[in-house]
Amino acid sequence: MPQSAPENTTVSLRAPQETEKPYSVYSTKEKWFIVALVAFAGLFSPLTANIYLPAIPVLTVDFKKSTELVNITVTVYMVFQGLSPMLFGTMADQVGRRPMFAACLLILSLSCIGLALVPTSAYWLLVVLRCVQAAGSASTIALGVGTIGDIAAPAERGGFYGLYNLGPMFGPCIGPVIGGALSNGLGWRSIFWFLCISSVACVVIIVLFLPETLRSLVGDGSAVSSKIYRPLIRLVGKSTSDPSFARPLPTPFRNPLRILNNFDIVVVLSVNAVINSLYYGVTASMSTLFSEAYPSLNQTQIGLCYLAIGGGMLFGSSVLGRVLDQGYGRLRKSVIAAQGPGNLEKSDTGIEDIFPIEKARLGLVPFSMLIFAACCAGYGWCVQERVNLAGPLLLQVAIGFTTMGIMTSTQTLLVDLMPSQSSSVTACNNFIRCVAGAVLVSTMDLLLRALGPGWTYILLAGICVLTIPLVYLTIQIGPPRRIKRRRALLTAPTQ
View (cartoon, rainbow, N blue to C red):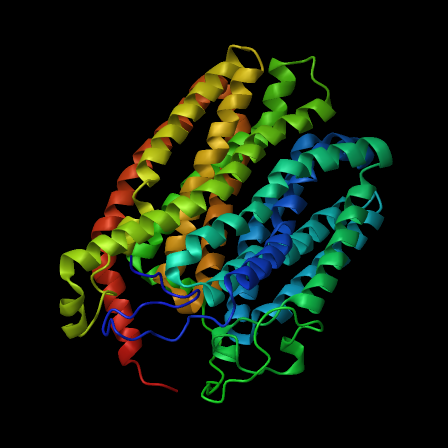
């Protein structure tokens, strides 16, 4: 039987008898360690957003404001959750991942101190500090995605994104539970003290253990960087420098919105934004719907109901990343077999221009979107008809699972399409989906009052189904645009 390639080694398609230099110096176990670190940091963006929700009724009483005004603090959080990665994510592509992780988490911890001490007579300060809190926490997701793009080759990114998403998706799962328990037991201010302490602990872990991964600074991880980029305790990576690595000259700040000039990327961003906004439509309205449909539930029990959709997302993260990598590998082998290694060796482009990576990443997405739409429609009618609580909770598990499958696929493809601007494209993704989510959340209550839960979720399911053609459009128009970008990058003059 033929032996498999060594770990972290990619077989060359141009010269099958040779091997290319590994994409990264880190072993698979070391990559998992780095991904686990950035997943912990990425947890804070959704955790900070969701842990706050159970405290809204208490805040309306303490600040003597209406629910609508207190909900503004949720809306502005989502807006800044979309805006801030445009700055910090793009800066991370220039100055490095490690310092930006530490800076964002420090901003989060300081804002939490302010929120814990804010006087109840200063509603305006609550709104401002929520904006600052979002600015600090939201960027960690884009930074984590950029880190994975630095250390993982395309064939293995799906699995790493699956694990990474366990962190960001764990927040919606446990956030409302922790927030409800802290608010009921110690008061709403304890929520922000909890976030402050945990974010400071994350800063310490990042400083101690996380190496710099930005390839323009450290290459494949073997180049020696300055002290600010080195972990205090080096647990992963080689200690020897790479004498062949020439650090490029500093590049000017690039506007991440320029990525939106690429139509195929805009289409992928649109699919991701629709699914993300529909997901937020389910979670943001759940507390209100359940309190009306199931009046026997108290706030703590409603908070525990969030575990259903969060559990579905956790399960989806652990399973669907591996499925994505397996599908990528099967399609890649079929393309190589169809072309013949000899033909690829003679080609000027190799497999890069032939392999349909859009199809590899998005092949299962239309099927997942159909399931997502069906579950949304069923969920709305289950709540409206007040069926046994097990019904809507099971449907929430399916909604969480399919949401994770769709978003893992689209986010992995975005990094594949823009590997040199992974944090920037993730920041654009975060901006568009957060704005779309804020729009839907702000109108969700109006829709529920006008249409009722059943027809509201039928409407949301219809939006999902109407988005499916965009997936096929990406598969169709994506390859020529991707090839054009890659060739332009290869022929661009070096600075």
